[in-house]
Length: 181
Ligand SMILES: CC(C)(COP(=O)(O)OP(=O)(O)OC[C@H]1O[C@@H](n2cnc3c(N)ncnc32)[C@H](O)[C@@H]1OP(=O)(O)O)[C@@H](O)C(=O)NCCC(=O)NCCS
Figure (spheres, rainbow, N blue to C red):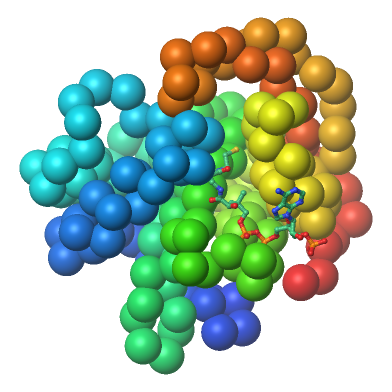
């Protein structure tokens, strides 16, 4: 898949670059991100962060589209949004935002923009979003981004503290009403 970049008002969603690695290292060490977006494997150091951005910058398999969410004017890194498990018209979406960027609708706007692109350009039909029931901020992002709640998955995912948590499954279909943000 070819790299693209997307704009959403003052946000720019763009492919990851090597120079993002130090900010990614700090983000992945944030306790909330470490808990709700666990990376598994080795502790997060410079090398792990560089591998992380390089893996996400490689879209060649067509199985994922991973983007840095930045401020369009000055390039400040605000967060991450990605489609993964892209296959047969389906995908899942994931995200995090830097602690300093939270509460500004960054996650909602990034999820809405990437989802709209997935429906129009990738021609996907269904995108799923899962979050721990114990993570209400993520539930709010899902609701605000138009992802309908479809049910609760019991002890379905092992998060950063090693415990299994119940999750809410949300999804948006290409045929659902558009979301304006
Ligand atoms: C969840 C997360 C992505 C939200 O990012 P954000 O940029 O602050 O989200 P937004 O500003 O777009 O929207 C957040 C919404 O959640 C609400 N919210 C924030 N913290 C909340 C909390 N603890 N409980 C309930 N709602 C909360 C906000 O008020 C806002 O709702 P509003 O639009 O009605 O005001 C961010 O907190 C984060 O990265 N957390 C750690 C990692 C994580 O949870 N990743 C998701 C894994 S599924």
